[in-house]
Length: 289
Image (cartoon, rainbow, N blue to C red; front, side, top):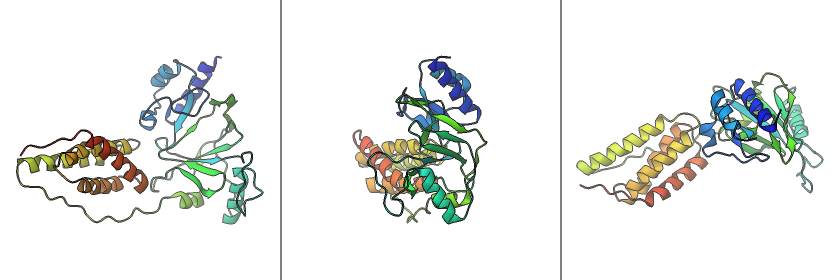
């Protein structure tokens, strides 16, 4: 079987499990498509068409797939860990120590060994928990996690000639409660209601309708596409702000509230709105009275 055929088979196998996949640059970790989280799919026909074009690695969008993947890394040459982790060599050792502290036993689940000898442990995202995001070192050194906004390479992928291999072909289990508690984001900060005073004329009504339309669009955005929807709304309202129809501060406040309501986090919300407002300012839109 050719490398293209084997990677296509691996992508189809992941999709059969309900995991949404997308193409990644061959022998690398870089997505081969833009908006990969939105375009990730389980459609076998789309997967066959894509992977028939070349030996793409298999990106697995963890958030849309309902997964939290715990990434246990290996100590890199020259890397030193802080006390009390000084003598640990692998994220699995750190995880074992954390489990001992929690007085809990390891839970076996689907697992993949990475090309560099790390381990990916796959867990189901808790249904009732707030959207978990990616973390780096939050649990401990040599441990990262991938959830909403993140991806991992699926088994069958190859990076720098080193394959990702299936280590434990078990059903994916629920994220252990102690991990869920540690990874669940803190509650979002309370926001004072934002009100925008607009003149009661034709221009004011137009601007009010434009704001309502964008906030409605954002409220209806599907999981996996919410950050993109926020950016689009920031661009549209940023054009009106640049044209003087509404202040940038009002737009930022309204979009921030709307973003928090749909579960976006403060850091990504601020970055996305700022980026959208800058793009909108490059194309001002004025509203005639």
